[in-house]
Amino acid sequence: MLKALIFDVDGTLADTESAHLAAFNHAFAELGFDWHWDTALYTRLLAVSGGKERIKAHWQSQATDIKDIGVGGLEDTIAQLHDIKTAAYEQAVKDGAVQMRPGVLDLLCSAGAQGLQLAIATTTSPVNIAALLRKALGADWKAHFSVVEDASTAPRKKPDPMVYTQTLSRLGLQARHCLAFEDSENGLRAAMGAGLATVVTPNDFTAAHDFTGALRTLPHLQGVGVAQLREWHQSAFMDKA
Image (cartoon, rainbow, N blue to C red; front, top):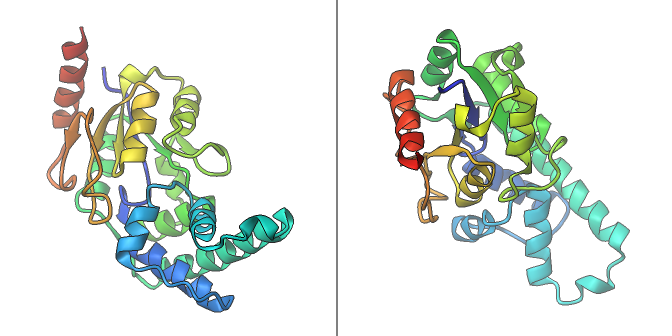
């Protein structure tokens, strides 16, 4: 029986990646870096989960002498870049530059009304989550979710299943009673690693990812209701019986 829906945030609940990309480039310019990530480069960097991790991966690909930089200095600079980027992203959300994906709000409302628990399992920062969901759901956005797991509680990033296993533990539910929603290959691998049937809604940045094993791959959640999710969920576990 389906008892809970577990959602990723960036790219799944909302089309966030263009705003994140612009925020990264703002941070680079602010600190005098001559980097400018275009869409193609950022799409490749999305294979690395986590903003700080993406900065470090790009830095390592550009700086052959990176080992000569003191570890503290490198990490401090990455943290500073990420702080500037986060502030720029938060302002973009406040300015209306980020939109929830089609069907998401309707599904959240109908699922809650029909007694399903809702949870968030993401490895983005708590500030990013709050900025997005405060704008979409109001100041009491946390009241909609039984559990929120994020980068502050699950340091091992997707595709590691840590964020999902912790979410299930806090929900007090087995994976077979839940559905996950993701937009990326790393997210799908993390959810499947925790034993979750997963609905994937790719976006422009993740459309070329490998979604083998997904319960369903859909362009968006518009028109997807709880009854349909229950049918898909039941069929997933009947197939395994």
